[in-house]
Image (cartoon, rainbow, N blue to C red):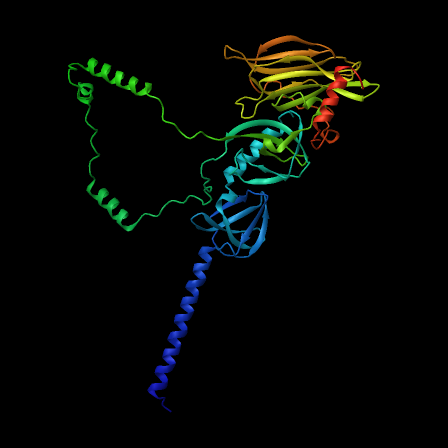
Length: 438
């Protein structure tokens, strides 16, 4: 029984369409496999990161990642990166929110080094404050300090408020570029011809200075030309510089939280946890560090402490410009200054020796830069009443950096919030201190 030619042509057409559709499907699957190939690895920088299903900002989140989570990079569209999480979810994030493998390793090394720094005091946060990876507003914030939360002070730094535009890290593995067909032909032609190497460039003439000098009327020799050019350069330097927009800077503090998170926060969001009875003598300056120098028992006021602090204005290029020792006067029931030094260039860390059993003195050391430009470490002894200089030796910032014992500064027992006092209350306190009343 013979088939109709029309039926045979229809069946062949359907077979062709089926083969073409299968071929296109295989190509699409191959494209999907290639797009899902891991191009690199990265780590999540902020505290939390939402992974969007599409590039659009309104697209929903398919997963939420935390700081330090490892992800795989499978595609890139300019600044946006498509990642794959450890759970297998795929989505888009901003490359600024990611850290490369090298950046994460460097961050871990810095945190280990910061963990060995001695504490320079304790502070509490005015409000919920972000902890940044670097002293910059543009750097990712990987943790937060809650309002009233206590932190330990490790260091400080001044940085521009508006930093350069942040660029995403290099997340894709470097691969050698494939040689094109044209390049292969050129290489084969060069090998077949065996062309000689390029000759060395010619040497400069002996009078190249005369030839390169500027044509100046009345200057016959090279020395005359050089003198004229030097005079012209000096005149240019003497011109007043153009008015440039000043760079706005901010003061940052390196802190360590109770969870051992180490990072940078804005100094203006912190309140040093030193009693108001001492903080009122700051004279408008910022308290950069403080230490307890022993307890004093007062029959009226209870237990008080002697204090050492360092102060300085905001945006200071070094750590402090003055330091002071306060002692508690049990007879007058108030704090008084035992020793004070101003107009210094001091650097962290300030080292205070731990309390020895039965000892009535405390030893502390400060590193300061003298007028001759050399760093010197000075050792002082406080006997409860007076401060005496006992030793002076050459040093550098970082000398004597030994962690303090846990009992030296108990941030949990210090004040957590600033108590505002009115004018009448301050006036009444000053009158009582003046006449020695309670």
